[in-house]
Amino acid sequence: MRDRLNVSLPVAMISQIGDLAARRKVTRSAVVEAAVASLLSPDSAEKSEAALTRRLDRLTRQMQRQERDLMIALETHALFIRFSLGQIPPLPAEAQAAANALGQERFARFLDTLGRRLSQGRSFRDDIPLDIPAMRQTSSAPASGKEASSP
Image 1 (cartoon, rainbow, N blue to C red):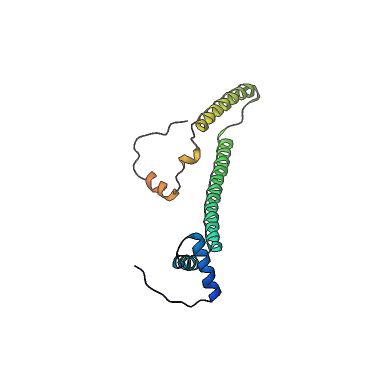
Image 2: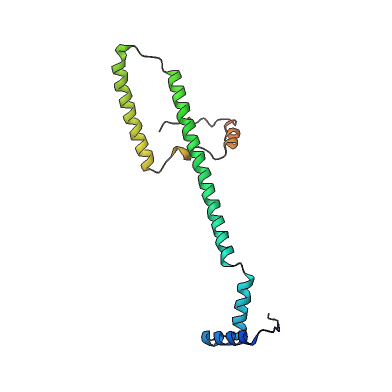
């Protein structure tokens, strides 16, 4: 539906509108309508600002996820070291060589497992729920009888 609106414009502007309409092969009304629509819509600066704000929001969320992942990695590493040092008794001197060989063998298996997981696209991060309180609620539910298997 269209409605009529009468406006008065300077003669020079009406002449420019007519010239533009002739060059583009459209009506003068179409030229004026496009100009008014452009004036009423957000200008390019506002569009750019909105796009920049969306990008910054996305980057902020990505940084928050990276901070979370780094904190999980640091805490996991610290807990592993703390428990390892607390659980492993000191070895007598005659057992050091055998323990060293066993440690090298275990480390090689660790690297193999790590390489397999990474090549499959699996990550420890994927095993950690985003909502920790929800995990606590589900872990207090009766166990299904499944035991976690080692990687």
